[in-house]
Image 1 (cartoon, rainbow, N blue to C red):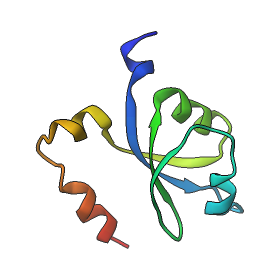
Image 2: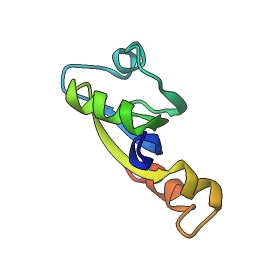
Image 3: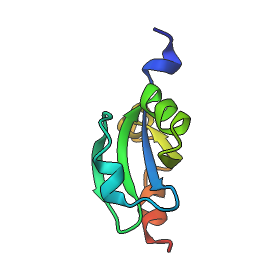
Length: 87
C-alpha cells in the first residue's frame, strides 16, 4: 500500500444536488464523522474512501488537512475553526 493510499484526511463532504446529509450518512463507506452540519459533514476518511466518494459522485469533497498534520499541531490548526464560521 502506498503512502498516499494510507493517508487519512479531515474533509468537509457536501452532498450533491438532490441529496441530503442523511443520504450521505447512509452510504456504506467508512466515515469517521466529527461534525454534522445542516448542509455538510466533517469527517476523517481514508484516501480510498475519498476516491470512492468522488468516483460515485456521492459528495463534493473538500480536503481540509491530513490527520497526521492535525495531530502534529502544526501551523494552521485553528484554520478549521475559522472555516466553520464562514457561511
